[in-house]
Image (cartoon, rainbow, N blue to C red; front, side, top):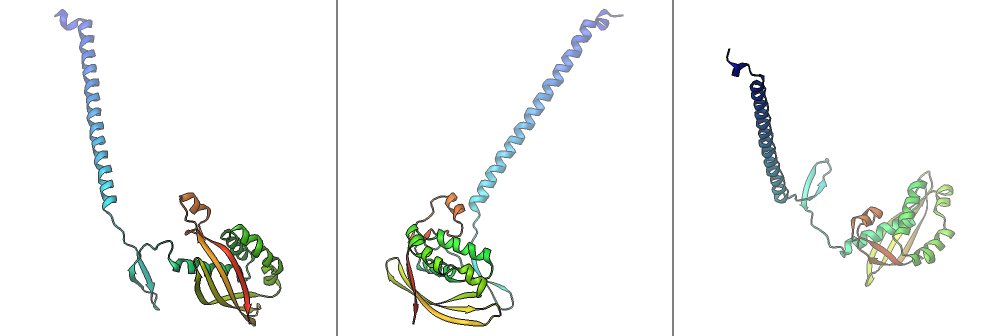
Length: 221
């Protein structure tokens, strides 16, 4: 028998060469797969970036008719922060929360908290504290009923100062009208726009950064 065919050293060497070849081949295959996957990932990321930059969403103001059908009315455009309509809406909401009395004490407390947050310190201490000390809305809600505000007039008197007229309708919990009173207020507002996302989180109900700097109201005869 040929000694070369039976030599254990040659046989082991041959098996070692085969194992080494298989390992190298396997390594090369994994390298090819990794390269293909990496290239595919790069293409996917580039495609997503292109799609995001190309996408364009146009928001629309939608109105619902009396049958509940939605109708797109007009494209929603960005409103400047100093738009007087924003100030008017802010003033109406502020006075409504400051003067209205509702039956739910938790909601009433939230409204008054928002009023204080939207007022500078001098308005808080010199006007709101004095008024609520003499006219506790929680006592009113518990012993009398509710007070509803209906706005009548909004006028610009000077730079950042506005006059507002409204009527207040008082009802008991049997929905009987107890009285109706007219009021007028002078209110000054400044804007301190939020500059970062944290400020929006801290004061989400005042996104435009409007604050009352002066306030007075009186009953009209």
